Length: 80
Length: 390
Image (cartoon, rainbow over all chains, first blue to last red; front, side, top):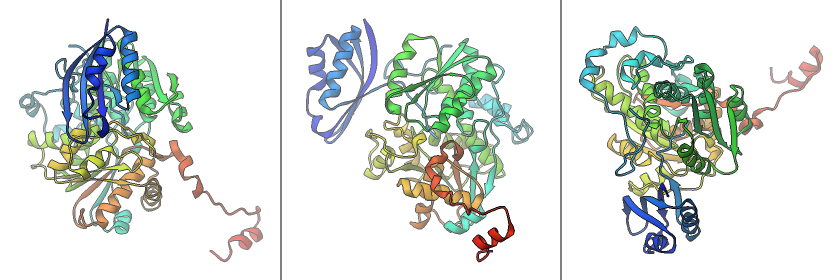
């Protein structure tokens, strides 16, 4: 079992879709929301995914295919 | 102490915290001014304990830009020329702190995800510190930037995809390998290096903060740290209270922070980067929220410019002040030009524009500038071709 911290960014048309619920039912992945900001037209959710590596990979691929942007939560910084 | 970068609970970035009371006792204007002519004159205000890994970074010129000021309509314009760091960008500041910390933590290998400038700086510092370096860059990074990193002999890895894809890969690698990832698990220390830009500008202005700052923004971190540097100096009683208006500049092709600012939102919606200003092409800026807060709270703002405007800005800076900046610098100058034209920045406001990376690494984007007059090696030929112009 591994854990992966990710950020989902939802486009407006998917705001009302139960993406995270479906992810945890369709794949053997435990979803644990830590932070979120969702409004009528946009939203992001920072969450931890726990499960077998393969299940997490497949789950992320499914979420991405739905149109949700998935980024690692690592506090990246590069500029200039 | 461990190299952590995220809060266990909310997964937010962790920040270094300081004992400012003790710091205030340790620093004074006189002591700082008497320090080495490098960023390490501010050592007492940085989160390090061991001997610094220093390749000669910082205390770069703050140039009074009278020629450019005349062009733009500003009487008190200064350029902070951070192109003149050892690897030609401000990245040396942050990497110097992060590598110093990496050595304290006992890492023998450092690594980074980069759009090019960071890779060069990490590789150079690794060479100096006798450490191994792995640097990961998008495969479409400009050739000059690849050479600029490769010369220091790191393990150079090109990744097919955008910077954000590189970042995704590195997020996985940091779990697998015991490396000091400069911009991941060493991020809190890395971030603090940028504060020295704010310190230096205030000291170089005679211990005062500017009225206005214009700086590039990719992740937004540099922008927030310039502000933090000024704010800390005021907190320590080294300068008066800070009333600086902070303006950030991005390229139209990657302007998620500007978009949020203009929408009046604190939500930074990611974008797919499409700009020649690759060093600031971060589609999902980790510090975008904080940069927005600084821009708003300081009474500043945000503006985006086209790639064409950025190139014009590069040429204008070069042809008025003799400074060859990379495209991000062109974005800053073009943004400054617009802010002045709109009356947002006023003629007599003391304004500092931050130029954070040098142009020669990406010189192909202005190759059209080369239009030489070809002559034979004799006087007749010269006068035939150019006589009418002389």
